[in-house]
Image 1 (cartoon, rainbow, N blue to C red):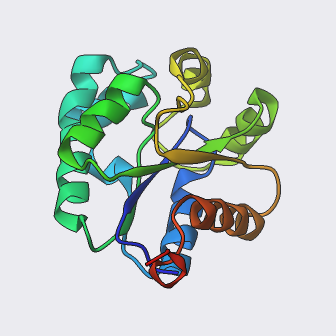
Image 2 (cartoon, rainbow, N blue to C red):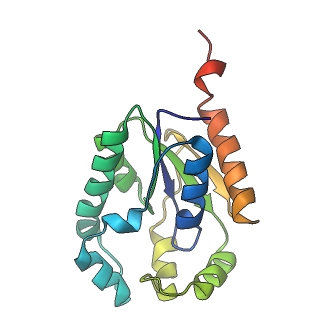
Length: 176
């Protein structure tokens, strides 16, 4: 399956966006962009110090991801972004209206355990509570799917691609 859509893999820190995103992109035959690479140095320094980002901090980051998605419109792609709030997703959609969201979900205990195992990542586990407090799940009017993150990365990616296929069937499967 390839898709002309850009898919944003979203969710709180530790859900596996950086692991699942490339697997989904490979299955879809489109490029992957790591959302963390779009952060300005000031954001990384703030998060590394254990300070949550505020909405103003996130604006240039979201705009950079939105620009990448806009440039990939009609060609497809997968990018990661926590996209925790509706206003963040709205900002991304303003740049690339046909975005689809893949919301990786899991319980706090599972995600905290995964974060504790990560080595060398700038996002400390201490910020997980702020991530869950900020999270606004996809609304029924937002194009996207939610996928639970229990299982292996391959199993999660397989479920994600299946859910995306149901949301956006392959062009050959679309009615004429």
